[in-house]
Image (cartoon, rainbow, N blue to C red):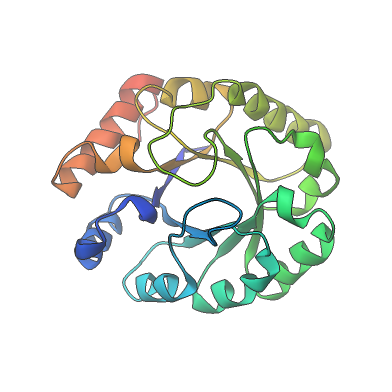
Length: 227
């Protein structure tokens, strides 16, 4: 499977949003939209209104990561704003996980679930067969630029093994510190979609088009995979 890349828009230059999206439309596979409520994690970033605005210019799918204490309060508005994939945190839905997953599907979106670094795969094993994307956090939630948590490599390997053993179909997405220092190990462990943020894209060059080229070259050099 060809590696996929989606761009974390919380890391972009909001004063130059339209121009940056025009560049990114030509370079990567999608847009990662972090919706934070200030409670589940101590930060507030994007919103359904921002998702809707981005959707007017985006030519690639938008996936929404709900870092919210009450994800069901946000699912409908994010779907109506144009999200193709909605991924709440397992830590927030386990009292009504199947109902939440069904609601996302009923709204016409792909379904995902996201795990914090300290949350084991066993926590959501009962419904892994029903989701389209499993996002594994390799940093604690809330802020860009955090150090990579290497223990997550074993979780990625476990997720790949569980999928193969059970005939499940979820894609393994990585959120946090996807960059030159981690690409090789993440890819070898079984990562399939990489969320590019500050360290993996935006800090590489002031010219975003140049930064995109550098990010792709770095991935190719570190993994040996031709993009």
